[in-house]
Amino acid sequence: MISEHAIVSPKSSIGKGTHIWHWVQVREGAVIGAECVLAKGVYIDADVQIGDRVKIQNNASLFHGVTIEDGVFIGPHACFTNDKVPRAINADGTLKGAEDWKVSKTLVRKGASIGANATILPGITIGEHAMVGAGSVVTKDVEAYAKVVGNPARKIGVMPREHC
Amino acid sequence: MISEHAIVSPKSSIGKGTHIWHWVQVREGAVIGAECVLAKGVYIDADVQIGDRVKIQNNASLFHGVTIEDGVFIGPHACFTNDKVPRAINADGTLKGAEDWKVSKTLVRKGASIGANATILPGITIGEHAMVGAGSVVTKDVEAYAKVVGNPARKIGVMPREHC
Amino acid sequence: MISEHAIVSPKSSIGKGTHIWHWVQVREGAVIGAECVLAKGVYIDADVQIGDRVKIQNNASLFHGVTIEDGVFIGPHACFTNDKVPRAINADGTLKGAEDWKVSKTLVRKGASIGANATILPGITIGEHAMVGAGSVVTKDVEAYAKVVGNPARKIGVMPREHC
Image: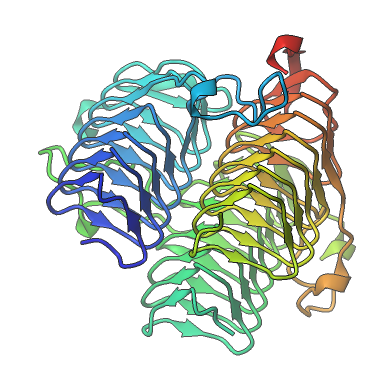
């Protein structure tokens, strides 16, 4: 079920039973699995890969270079990134194009959760069933089952297995 | 006045003189008072209760379980939450439904202000005329008239009564 | 090129070669230079001034009082502010109008970059080619070429000239 107010590229792939809500944009080459939810205003950039049963909340933005495995939760307003030194212009003053920067890859492993309004720096891996607290700024890899919070995010505990 | 680009459930209630701008969504059972402003892209989830003369800025998301009293200011990009351990899937791997999680209630008391891009953890009460600084992550209750800032938010002062 | 899903005031000015994507709003009196990119959901408030070759990413909100010089990068979800003591209501309980608050001015100088999900407090100047890290909360002026990160943002280094 796709909202009539969403813009989904015909060159993307959307799995069975996935719901896409109002003002969502899914770009060309994106692959989204089955039984996912993309809530209001979510942005899925070109070629982003998303597994099955992934829940992505309001306004979250996933940029080129991001891969999300099965069963991941991405909280509202969460923001991924893909450029370690973002600049609008090249040294010669011309506007940067798609060829003028190096994309860093980001991977969120199976069953992990990203809290509301979290920011994920480029080139990060977030381990299986890890929990990133709301409002955190993740600047380095997160171990499987770890709970991290803060700016920068630091490990404060381990998620109990029954929650996963 | 409601923008033709907003989506407002016929099962919600909107008070007299309230303005609703472009790409706002108001869901079923939400009750919004009089003379409120809901700016571009605001999201009001099912059954959220909002008083009179409340100003909610761009892209703020208020989820099920949130109650906002009269005269509250909610800054742009502010994000509420309602789930202490958000997960996309149950232990058996099935997608979580509305029955599979416990909603925490959040209350913002009369005249309080929530700064831009603030994140409010679940189950919090923010006292009357309190001021939450921009970019703060609120992890525990905020006293009336307190000013809090940071991640996690800490009390740094008391608001003078003349501002309220 | 302006998306048919954007709302651009006829009383704004848009430079040659500027791209405006879906669900962007540009208000009256805003002046946007040439070869800019305004990505999905960006908000440009009344009278905001933006130079040439400025790249503004998804959902960023720029409010009245903000000036952006040439070649600036503004990351996704970045949020500007213009009111040091935001309140929805006046001391007499009436809703605040445009006359009831003092706008603070914010200036982002040539070639600077604002990271994803950063929050910029009112009345700040960010110097030429400065770099504000993702998720930072900027509470005071940033020197030219400085790199700042954190909440509140602190200087952690200087940008090499070759990146600018």
